[in-house]
Length: 479
Image 1: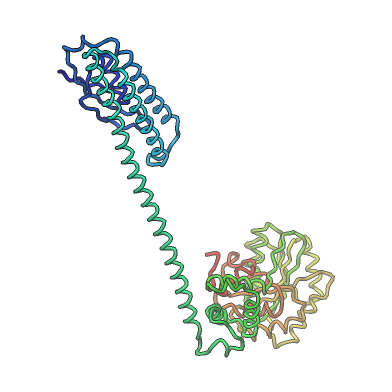
Image 2: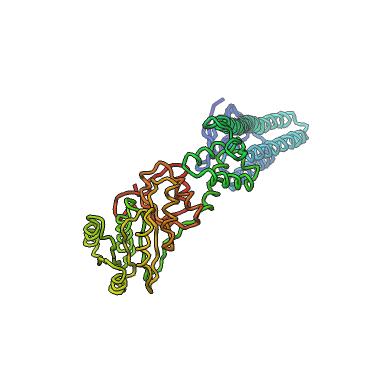
């Protein structure tokens, strides 16, 4: 007996090579897998056969066609399986499709094995004892040929089933863990909300009911924040009552949704006028008490219109009282190449407007007047009695308490105010006073002056910005 080794992409292919050389007398000693099949390269199998050189010449020729026919069928089955696997597009080796494919392959090989056994029995039709012996030997060889691939397929199937089961179990465990963590996170969120609500049920040693309105404990935190900002109590109670009336019950379960809803309610309570985008002639007069930053606000507006909007701007100042006021404006006007005129009397105001009629914007600066000096405020009104439409903007400081803001507004109200401008937002600890004045007077806000830098520290007023600064604290958007 001699041993020979042959290789092929499949065990039948390797055995076929051996039989093509040694005939059907070649007995399989060992069949093993050398390299697994992948998407980029075929598999490799090795078959070791034993051959008795003395018996090769005694091989009956009558059996060979039958043997070759069976071997041909085995090759056809293996080739069909190989082509089907190559044609199928798959991305995951442990997918369930592979298990089903292997199951079908095992079933087909098993059926063929039974068919071979049945046909081999029929081969024993000759009375010749040698022929019977040859048939038994051939049947044994064919059984071995079929059984070994069957065992390999079964082993591979079991391995894949274990891997698939392991992956599925791992995936299921991961999903269970994720769901469990989500549940824990939701419970923690609810506990945190409850702790916040408990902590805020009592503030300033008073219950919500003692504040004049029956406030549920889940609104305690947002009520405290709004009250700390400086919003007047009557205004806050009215807004809170509106929120309690309109807010859906489902939104009250979470403190974040309560804050979000309350924030939207506050935004709808005030109005900010957007900046005009047209380039039609516009005259803006800035009025207000002393020390609120009117001249600086006017310089910021002039820079904004001339540098950013590329508009033609002219300046008229009525302030002949404050030392250095004219010099300050002249300094800004020179650097921005803006025309500036000084007016001492109402009759000269119309002439100055006529001389600047080529400008897109004419900004008028006035001397500061105390809200308690109604006579001097009346003097400003005389400048407005002309054929020109003059927009008056009341400039007030955000550091002024609400009661004084209300007095200032009432005093300057005789000038037919169009908008409000608030300065020094960067110096105020809370902006509730601004909100309450805008809420009570229903007068729109046009600009916020948020610092000393010209022209950057001037922004167009928006509801969103004011409410965010009110509840979260002021943040300079230009920094």
